[in-house]
Amino acid sequence: MLEGPAIQSVMGRLPHTALNLAAFGLTFSISLIIESPVIMLISTAIALVDSEQAYYALRRFTIQLAVWCTVVSGLVAFTPGFDFVASKLMGQPHEIIEAARTPLRIMLFWAGAIAWRRFYQGVLVRYKQTRKVSVGTGIRLTSAIITGYSLLYWGKIPGAQVAAWTVEVAVITEAIAITLFALPLLRTEIPYLPKRKEPLTARAIWQFHLPLAATTLLTLLAQPLTASALARLVFRDKTLAAWPVVYMVLLVIRGWGFSLQEITIAQAGYEEARPTLRRFASLVGWATSVFALLVVITPLLSLYTNKVLRLSLDLQSYVFVGVTIGCLMPLFTSLSSWARGLLVHRGMTKAVYRGMGINLTGHITLLVIGVALRLPGMWVAAIAFSVASALEYLYLLRCANAHEVAAASA
Image (cartoon, rainbow, N blue to C red):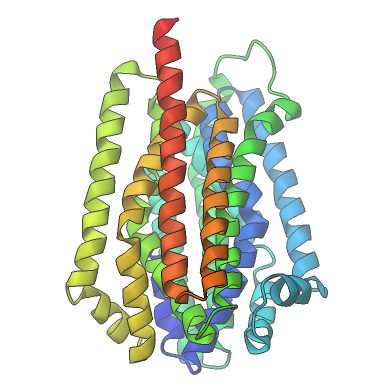
């Protein structure tokens, strides 16, 4: 999660900061939609790679997804499809669209590289080699910082393009590192796993993974939908520039909670671990939300937006409002990740999908109300994200508790 602030700090030191922040926000939101089918590969790998045959079946599946995502990325980036999505569907200003066109083309192989590394991260987590995952992420962050600041000092390309090259190089570097870290495991453990009673088929993988992929798609649709709403409200240029900063600040704080999903999937099979997992999720959630509040009420947020990002005072005020409203989002992120992990462990991926559907429905409803009433854009965006996250968690909790009661009765 620190990669985003590092990239924004580079853009803050280049000309036309507001334009480039908004342009890369557009680039990144479209790229996230394209890569949405592959993000949950880490969860699928943790749950399904229990034999050598399953490993190779899921690896073939990963390669197919990576190829298709790359094809879709090319079709959007190098055809009039980009203008249709950015202008007609999202209503973005012309200058932001033009500034985002080249960055989207630069990120052509981003989704494919993410698919590959998420698969191998899942394999490593499944077999308790999580430190290698964190080392790989450290390599990615280091690569991003080196690439970003090298391009900054070169000073020949706009900030949004610098950001695109930075994330592309960083994720490919991490994918290579994670593959190398997984090689010993593939030689010493995977070949000697017990054989499955029934081979893992492509159809079974699709049945398990598709609801998770759809969940991610619904999750990531919130970003372009929010940008579309902000483009239709007053002070759109300032809000569109400030919102990616708000989202990234909250994303960094919420990062502690996201990993709870994979932790829960890996450990929920042990009955004695489940109460501890729940308490830990609550602890992480409250701690990170309190930290978010401290970021707002202390000089931390001002130091970050002023000294690191070098934003203008008016953009800083927008960021302050957005982060303040979103202080409870880390709590809902942690608790939802825990509940989602329980449901995935139990194979209830359709419930996860429905939960995200509730999230997106609530999010869209609030955005529509905000646009109809012409409310301040930052308030609309931050409230929509927070309330929608709360609704999703309540549904996931209900599903998890209902399954627990049914299992106890049986």
